[in-house]
Image (cartoon, rainbow, N blue to C red):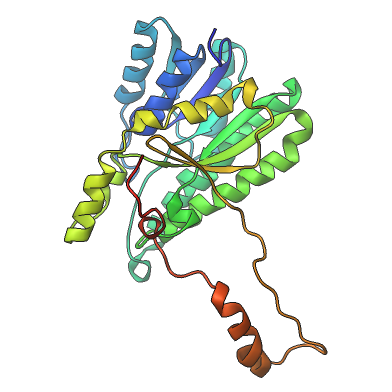
Length: 303
């Protein structure tokens, strides 16, 4: 018996890349899988039922159970419909992987409102819509697991991704809120920042030699290496794991820190703007975080 035997799992954005690999791995572990994917391009434009159906067919051909779903996660009614279709077909829901995403990168001072809102709509609001649609079922059955995909772009930083960074860091807050609010119902919620070469990552600029070298390194990060960890988090054997932020890269698994005070200063009688500049800032400056990108922190080759 697999870790997910008899469970019903929705994986959004499962037509390609990391989502596809998670759906396949979940099926191998015995899950009945809803393969959700709108089938749009990297920016979210268009739609194609083919990718989701192809993954569902791959699962059924291997002896598993799966259905394809082409609904959008980025609208409240559509997200609820995805969950309702799941329950109508399989009778229940046990886990949700919020993986669907788009990219519309642009340097901040040139980013238009439409690009910002579209990315936040899919990543952050889509994760909320899907999670909220599943929450009533999980609460009623006193069980359930959420896995949300965040990114080191949000946790650490990257150029030209204000929309993506805001959405991905927002997902961390959403996941923690779900974990806290639904713990009494036996519901778990965790985040994963995956490193993998996918068509979204393939949009990274490679104009300079440094960028080209980074892209070549990313191409070695196969998305199938990501899949075992989120599938494990969906299982009952991980029932004690909730409210955490993880990273996965090739054969490495990381546990990320969460924001806590690192240094404090105190002034009897309070502060003035002048004493803040003269005393508080110099005292805290050694603990300031530099303007690093993900690649500045993860400087070693994948293991």
